[in-house]
Image (cartoon, rainbow, N blue to C red):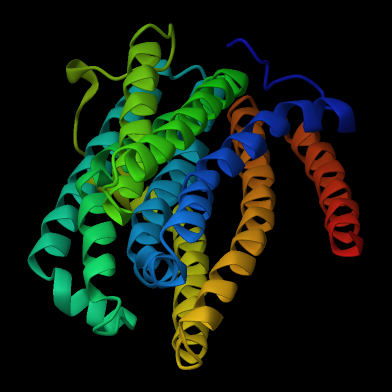
Length: 329
């Protein structure tokens, strides 16, 4: 593994390991923020409100991918620490197949119940066309979104967080360029913004797939695919706290959104813009915790409990001071 997770981590080494993952997740969230910037500037506040109304559905895909990535990495990194490379590959393959199946199911259900779903989320007659356009196109790329998130998290487990970061930055730049092209050069409206994000996700996913095929320890193979109910139950046990957290945040966001929406489209646009800042801070904190989980799983498998205790204490101190600094800023 190119980045040794078995090393004794100083605060600087811990931050150096976690930093690429934090920036990577922030750039992934910037896809939607970049869409919002172009939509608000060139399509108006109604279109921006439509984006915010349907985004909880897109967030479900991201939340499930994060859940599979977080829970899966805890299991995979432990197996790698124990030297059980075949079991680690089996887990990676099974979790990837599960993620792909879930994303395809969400894609089909969304297309079938597109209009009722937009209505439930709070769309009005004025916003319905834009809501339908953005949600339907975005969910067509749900498998790419799911697998991109999964593979980039597994690159962290494989000890290559910087590589995942470079791929995410490249995809983010591509997304911004395509937003300009598909909204201004070829006026495709809000659907153009969704297509731009989808193409960037597909490109990122394909590059990740190609890289993971060449990794020495952690890669997917048909020979290693053996569906096991026990393994899936273990995944749910480890990932359920993350899933519940995302569920609470999504439900809370819907409640606030429904209240703000009652004040008019301009208020909803303002809420959309400011809410993205909170999302970035939340993603940064979650990414740091995700990196700590990967470090913990690897050392747990290697039986180095002393390193886990020291690493977690240092990580907690860093998280406290960082969050206080962000609050002051």
